[in-house]
Figure (tube, rainbow, N blue to C red):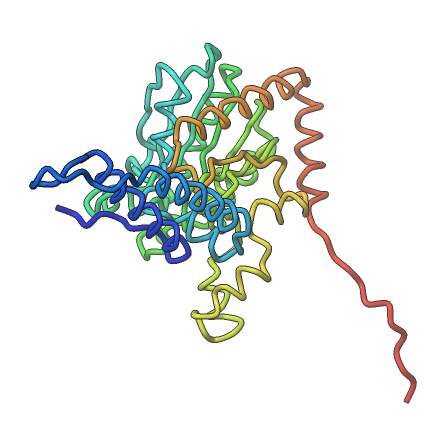
Length: 335
């Protein structure tokens, strides 16, 4: 039997309190010991600890630093794309293959109904077990995955179906075979084609949003992001290795890169944050899925009212306007 996950490092005070509460509840459910002597009433202590635990959760989860949000995005119990697809959509029909080389299982693609309306779905999928992760390639797509995504997008365009894209990847697969089959070209082609595809597109970053691996299915009209996801050109560890020559300084790198949802919303890289329950999406996947569904319906409703030329113009303007910079206007000192 696999060892039960005991929480992230910064969650340990919460885990300890919850374990103590569970022990006391077990005692309260057993009113007498083997000698028939009544146990001490612990209900008051349970109530006190529950209040303390709630306050502690609020204090910890409301003040997460970027490195802690990255850990949340990689949480082993965090819901993956298929979990949300099964809760949000109906009549999902998966389509396979890129009509060229093979079927990349790191990408799930097909058509479904969103509140009765037909939509196309692109979704990067990780695995729960080692075997599943080997099949899904840990959510890292090959070139054929990006070509499959483009095939589905072209079908959606042909039949006037909006596209919803789920991003959750460390990055595109960097292996020799993927490079030989045109990894860079496949991603670049998707970037170009998604910028002009004539149908509304929405993407949501649900966990990790890594580099070109995410962008290959992420050029959209609206970019949503779960509260505890991250979106970045490189992982914090990779950035720390390059800039500081020390991967252990990932927390400092994560802070500097501005990769969290609040930072990216402020910088206008994303358009909306989808809230998660206190403690992360894994605490209540149904509530997270409901929040996500409402965001999809609201944004698609607005996008579908736009004519295609207007939609494409707005999409172009969106990406041209991303970016913030400052200039140092100090005058040069004369020698």
